[in-house]
Every structure is written in structure tokens, then in C-alpha cells.
Length: 104
Image (cartoon, rainbow, N blue to C red; front, side, top):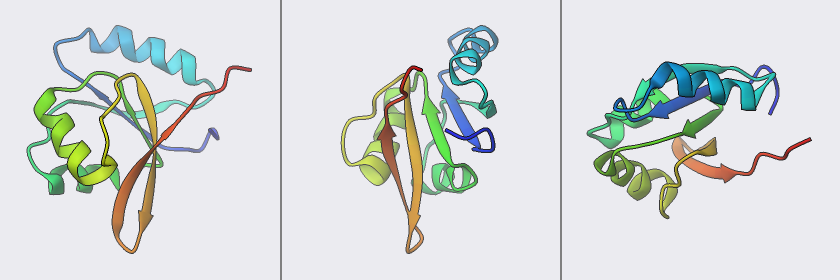
């Protein structure tokens, strides 16, 4: 990750958003989470319009119905929680590719 990368952070609203966001910001230093949103995507278009503005999506916790929207249209496999995904756009099709963070 580069300090200039933009990261969208998704967390189910039932969790302590402020505390967990601070903890994940610490883990990703020097990169900062750019926007925190609750897990609430009812359509593919809704998620697509949001995610195309970012380089990465960090999914901390997500509701099952939202995971299904993401899985079926953007990942084509199960949606892992507490996971970082690279946003890739090719021919206006958005896909999310799972990334592994390396500890230094």
C-alpha cells in the first residue's frame, strides 16, 4: 500500500465503529482509511457507484445480504471479512481482488 491509496472501509453498524476504525487505521499505517460506511448495499449499482472512487476496499464486518451483492457481481467467491481488496476496473467492469497485507 502507498500512503496516497484511497481506502473505503466497510463495517456492519452493530459494531463499535469508532474503536475498530482506529485499530484498523493503526494496522494500515501510514495509509489512512478514507471513508467509513456501514454495511448497507441493496443493489449492485449502489455498491459500484461507491467503490469506483477508491483504490482498495477493506471489509471488516458485513451483513449477509450485502455480502451476497458483492460476491455475485464483484468477487465471484466468498466475501472474507477483515480483508483488504484491490479495486480493479477494466472495460468499465469492477472486480475486487483479495490482497494479503505483509508485516514488516
